[in-house]
Image (cartoon, rainbow, N blue to C red; front, top):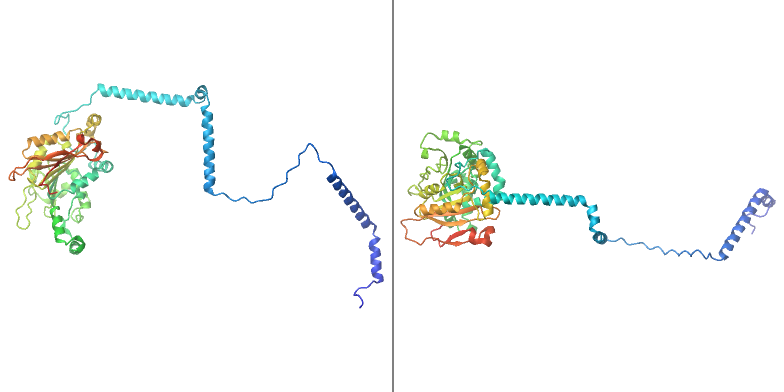
Length: 480
């Protein structure tokens, strides 16, 4: 078989032409000579002796990829390094001599020294003034200005707003809630002020006639359900501790305006009975020129079940409303008389307690007081005495009266008045607030031994119970 391409004269001529090109042959020969020289030099350098002054370079290690460290471990290492650096800096600073420290930090040392000198001078001056200038302390009823119970600088609205945060901060709101929950029957609140206790009374029985029929049926079904324990007994128990009527007395019509506004907002179903912006004077004039209890003006709602009176409580207290249910005679005495921060705002607090006792139901009735006055600590009493004038000018009361002395004097003067409880609750008030519970002994009842007082630790004063509070025990007639 013949090959596809055979040698022909053309092929021989093409090969001869390729070998006969002079320029290309010269370049190829030159390139081959250069490559030979490079090979000779490389071979010679590899055979040469190593340089004795130069160390041989280490061979690189094989590539190994590093694993990423967790963040927690990195953070721990950084914290350890920072601690080591700080410890090293402290050690170096401890080695510095005092002269170098004074020279480097003279400005800070001068500032600290000046501050300490000023503080020492102020403390020494205050101590000398405290010892040489005794605080003025006036006997009861001999104050330079008669208390009015009305703020002389602030308006009633500013006065009420000021009490919001301060009473919550010192626990007064909690005390108001606890004491108002004890009110039952026919209730009289003396010095009602802006009505800050209104939201804590039980108004179910008072506002029962204002409840819509649908809501009344729903409440009746809930009270008679099996999980309320039978309904009738529970309802009877609730009625025993419910408020039947409420009477509030205050001398300031501006305070009563706010009390009406608060009554509209917190008492159930009273929004339709009181205008949005009530005025006590206008409502009293609309009420008519009927009988004015003890010369004062009155505003009443729900057939006299809720009454607000503008009257001076130091002259006389109104009688309960003439309400008769199920053929019983109308009441002549109150079951509960409540007063908060009122003894500091009258000229003769003992006389006011006498009027309260004469209006209280003997035996079962209770007088509940929440007052502020002198503490059990002399240092706190000194502060109260020094700020008494300024406090009187702002709020119209003397806050440095001794409430326990006033109550004991009233129990000594008023026949049948007994002290059931005297407590100083809370620690934030530093023992300046006092809760007192009184009753009038029933003359027709059997003669009993007087209430035995025992020490009770309350609030922060648990460690000093002998100085802080007393409470009566063995009180069989107490029904609250």
